[in-house]
Amino acid sequence: MHYKFIKAFFPALIIIICNVALAQTTPTFSFTTPTGTIRTCAGIASANYQQFTVSGRNLTGDIKLVIPPVTYVNNNSTQATTQQAWEMTTTPNNLSTFGYTLNIHPVNGQVDNVTIYVRMGADNLFPQWPASITISTDGADASQTVYITGTQVPLAVVDAVNQTICNNTSTQKMVFTGTGTGYSWTNDKPEIGLAASGTGDIPPFVGTNSTSEPLRANITVTPLGECTGTPHIFHITVNPTLQPSLNVSADKTILCPGEVATFTAIPLNVGDLPIYKWLVNGQTTGGNSISGDNTLTFVTDKLKDGDQVTCTVTGSTYCYMPYTSTPITIKTAPLPEIHFSSNNYNIYPSQSVTLLSIANTDITSYSWKPTTGLNHADIPNPTASPAVTTTYQLTATEAGGCTATANVTVTVLPKLKINLDIPNTFTPNGDGVHDTWEIPKLADFPQSTIKVYTRYGSLIYQSVGYTKSWDGTYQNQKLVTGTYYYVIDLKIDEPLFSGFVYILR
Image (cartoon, rainbow, N blue to C red; front, side):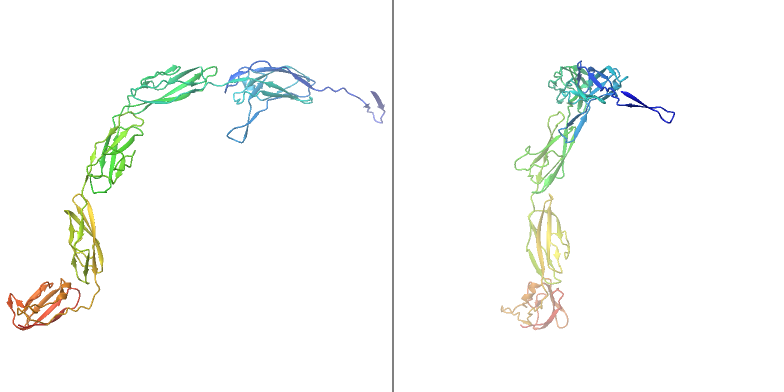
C-alpha cells in the first residue's frame, strides 16, 4: 500500500488510497444434531420436543429457519392442499410463540448456541414424513436442512351396534370392538334397566318400558388407551307393550256381482310403522285378488256371497301380537234381467206407443233416458210419442240395489200418402160374404177413431181402433138397408177420412 499526497489550490487535503486489498470474511452458521423424542396422540400437538442449537459467525443478517408446508392431493379431489405439520420456537414455555418460521438475530455478527425446540403439530396428517427445516443466512454459501422425526399414536376407536328389544325381554351382550385397551360408558336413561355408567362390555339385561312410546337410551362409550379416543354414541331402544285394535267398516255389505266395495280400517294403539294385511276368508291369495296391503283402505270387485273380509295389523317397531279385526260378511244380490216385448216399435208422426218392459224379479225403481216424448220416466210401461226416431234406455233397480238395463227403439216413419181402401158397400145378410165392413189398413192405426152416422146425424157406431169390423147393427139391432155416413180420424195429424157406406140386405 502506498499513499499519494496532492497539494491542492484549496485548503482541503485529499488523500487517495490506491491499490488497497482489504481482507473479506464469509458468513457461516452451524447446527447440532437434534436430540429428544417426540410422541403424541393424533390431533394433539406434542408436549415433548426434539431440539438442536444454531450458531453463526461473521453474520451480516438473521439466521432464517423455515419449515415448508406439506402439499398433498385428497383422493376425492384433484386440487392440491397444503398443511403445516410441524412447529418450532426458542421459548417452548410460551406456546403462543410456536410457528413455521423463525429468525435469529446476530449480536455483533454472531449467534452463539441458540436452542431451537420443534414439536409435532396437532393437525399433522402425515406424521410418517419428517420435518425438513431449512436454515439459511445472507451471504452464506448455501442453505442447510435439519430433519426432525416423531411418532403420532392413533386415537383409540370403538364400534357398537344399536339394539331394539321389546319390553321385558333381554338384550344381547354388547361387545365393544376397536383399538382401545378398555372402554367406559354412560347411559342417559337408566329407566330402561341399565346402570347410568360402567366400564367394559355391557352384559345382557332385561329392558323395561312402562310408557306407551318407545324408550331410546343414548349410550356413550369412550375407548381408553395411551390415546383416549373420541366418544361413540349408540342406542338401545325398548319398545312398549301395546294393546292394538282395528275397527273396519265397509261402504256397503250387500253387493251386486262385480260391484266395487271399499273397506276402511281405523287403528288404535298400533305404534309407529305398523304393517297391515287385508284378508278375504283368512287368505291373501286364491280366487280373490288382494290389493291395498299395508294401507288402511282395501278396494275390490272380486267378492262373492258369504265372503268375510278382515284386516290384520302387526307392529314393526312396537311389541304386540298381530291383531285381526272383526270379520265383515258380504252378501251378494242377483242381477235383475229386463227386456221388452219388442225391441223396435214403428209409429207415424203424432202417433204414440206403449213400451212394454218385462222383468224377472221385483223391481223397486225404473229410470228412462232420454225422457223426451215419454209421458212418465219412472214407470215400467210409459207411453212414447217422440217426434223423431229415438232409442230409449231403461234402468231397472231391484231391492238389493242391483241394476239392469235394456234398450228399445221407437222408429218414426215418414209421412205417407194414406189410402185406407174403404169399401162403400157391405151386405150383412149372413151368407158369409161381405157380412162386415172390412177396413184392413186401420190395423196400422191403433189410436184411430171411427164414427158412423145416419143421414140425420145420429151416431150409430163408434170405436177406438178397428180390431173388430162393424156388422151393420146398432144396439144389437140390425140397421135397415140404406146409406150411412162415416168419419175416420187416424190421430196422426192427417185430415179426416169421411164418406158414405151403403148397407144392402
